[in-house]
Image (cartoon, rainbow, N blue to C red; front, side):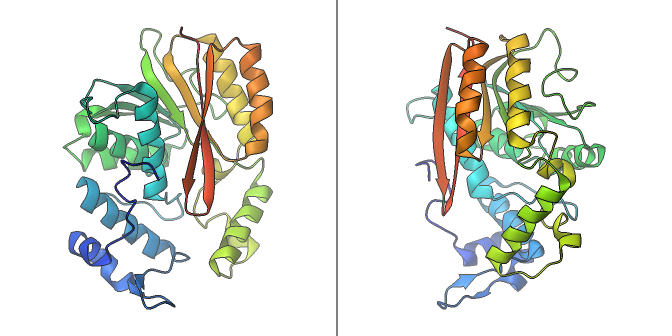
Length: 292
């Protein structure tokens, strides 16, 4: 993990329970006799997230049923790498350097804006196509007055748009960020959820798989990850000065060559790939800019 990631040393469950008593019923000895939780239990994972966010950032957090429950260490990892990209993450640089960030598809969990505002003092505009998710994110912002003035939530009316229709003509951002839907269809998303359940040792039916850790819009879109990021590249070229750096997560490494070709075709000045790893999970940030 990144050197500034607050969760590098693992979880101190006694401390986390002290921060949030809702976690206590879910903490039990694992096969090795160590304190842990059942990571296949959505309620246990949500309680862990609540404790992590309260202990590390003094944030109040909750999530509606059947919405994507994010892994907190991995989400904070993205933000630390973005701080390095901007050069505001070193010990000699104040963390609260004014930075404006556009989070494309913030989700009901609103996790990037909440952590980014608390960790770095960044200003966020978060966009969301799902009105229920948007309302929940707005309630999370209101529940955390320490960062509420730094966060704005906006409805994106088009599920196929990234920047169009939701950003003003006169505004600019230092960064955009995004965790795009991975799958191309509801069926593919259901199969992916079933694989996840099997890996966690959970037995679930295909009928309920889509409700295990995410709504449809969080899990799939037209063209999947490759199509979504491709549309983002096209829109970034339409407004190259909107962001100093456009960035997105790319889960599948084999998608990179095609995305590099698209970025070359729109004359991106600089393209970077920032590798990340959280346990067995590996991912990467694709970043590009049109500024010299």
